[in-house]
Length: 541
Image 1 (tube, helix red, strand yellow):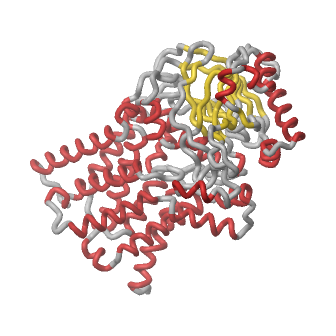
Image 2 (cartoon, one colour):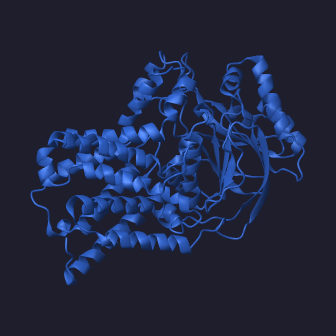
Image 3 (cartoon, one colour):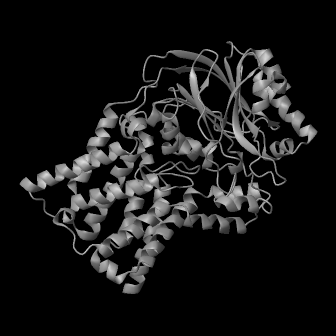
């Protein structure tokens, strides 16, 4: 028979660790299908291990609760982010077992919202002398906690935001509520269901309202599938997606100025971009940082002779516009190359002239910069394997030769709904599609490219915005506003896709206008409804 001490540590460490594994199982993996209920059950395991009653808080310190969160994060990290050690080995040449040791350190940063919630909850309980009769009702308490958890999840900065409600994407295109409430609604529902499971198993209290609302939300989504476009297509473009499958060694060699590497990269892009097509191509797309030489958008905008000959020759051969990732020179100059370049996207017209650019705003910590503010410029003198890009300021509204407006997000910017929402709302017009330029070659044959694609789809659903996802080594495809996807250019395959892109005049979705606050209003309305029900027919708890 286990001693109480052993049972305590089982609850503190083993249960949340298994919960982390289950949570990760809801997202794409290369070796098993995704498990829809993984995030719900996994979160229930973690919540079960935390101190929620006054008696538990007397028996367990806050450090025990934080240890449970770390145990959850370790399980989540090992299964969900096993590609981080692979990347450290590929990108940083860090060998085994040091790469896995450093990968496990990520566990301390993977779920900051859960750490903050645990600290907040302890502080709330400490200053709360006695719970009100309203909060003492199980359903009310679970709704309040679900609201708080959803707010922490949405507003706490995260490196790779795979939220608890993202598992609902598996139902697409049957997600009619996604453009209205966005992913926060589904996070709120999943947190609520997880809390209801803990109430039943740990405290023997029922929360039938949680399961009723879950079923109603599920039914509404299933019976109201989303359409590919909001309205009848108003614009048609014949597009070419060029996935060159350029390996990291060749890519870095070309960027470092090796002539043979330049020639090989240039030749590959020219041959793929100018292949014969069944129909005239309107737009050609290349991936993130495709053009290896430093460009200068300021010079190109004033004099056409600064437009690269490769780009001019491709446009002359095809008569198409070209949209590519590359490096844009900034006005800064220093010996450390600190913020002297931007990771950028460039748009060239079918006349060979430079039209516009977008400079990446949200940079990848420890890859494109460091999160240490003013100390970064001093650290740049000693840390050589980080790019230290300058950061752009605003999203650019591009326009095709046919007058169709569109926008771009580079790499993992597409993962952050609040970031995309903020910048879309600051534009002077409404784009008809979004271009996501990406290079996932560093992650090898792992789940990262599949997870990146999976989470990107949420932006198409939330904003009813088709996404052209253009990558170097895969996965390349077009995602439509209902979550449908065109044929994929699979990983590590050199391929050209010629597709017809249909887009329509787009109107701001409710989620774009109001963000998470529609979900909070819905949750508060539920609280009021439960309070009214309790007044006339008290619930047993």
